[in-house]
Length: 328
Image 1 (tube, rainbow, N blue to C red):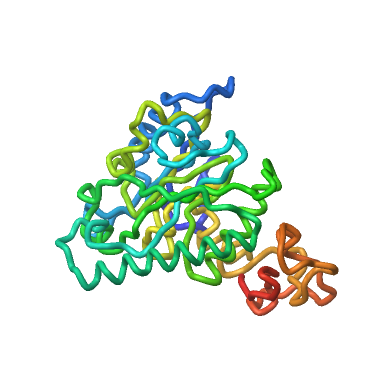
Image 2 (image 1 turned 90 degrees about the vertical axis):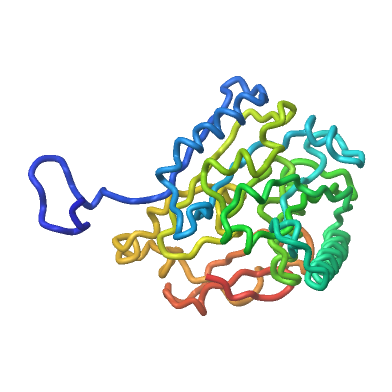
């Protein structure tokens, strides 16, 4: 492959359109019928994207892979040991918590394991308090079955404890109202107590990790259960371009999975890469007029400023939790 920006070549070929990037796949049932066949085909497609993912010196540790599906309501009703409201009236999400030796497939380390378990309890208590502040009720927690033996050493060493959280609105909210409440809780949990949510939504859920594409099916037994049904599935095999792999950076994200083209040198040079932002106006360091300190009004995070656009990170702010957080 000729370097991007090299001398023009004859014909229609242009080397600037050559890219090495992640693998992305999408499967959907056009009738909207949830089925396990959609999930199974998506995982097969993910395996076929192995060549688009990357691995390090430890061949068992991938850059990251995962799948996003609709909430498998019937499946969750059978595997959860607590009651769930009607479909669409509850939120489910995957949470990364401090890991014990068992989570990483290691021999027991009593001192470290005790600290990890204490950390899990503290995180759950803090999330419960934040949920109450956001008018959400914790319905229950579910440990996500997984098989750490399929991972490489690097992935196991960094693995979190995987747990699913289920919530409902105190006013039996549904749809976008419940989505916004979950969004506010997720943001606050990340910023105030440092807990990462791979997803938290009444509509979709993510299973992902620092895995290679073929490892996803074996690592998460849930995905092989015939009761797990969805009408759509988005899969991703990560090829990290400018960051080291981690469990958090695996895709899909909560709404998208991208193939990394925005991270190319050419894109960065034209102002649309990770080092710059193409916002129409810099973000305001003050909250929107009349913004409340709690509630879904905080989802309106940007307001136009009167000063010129700047690529400085100090001019990019997000208003949340009652105060400004610089974040670019």
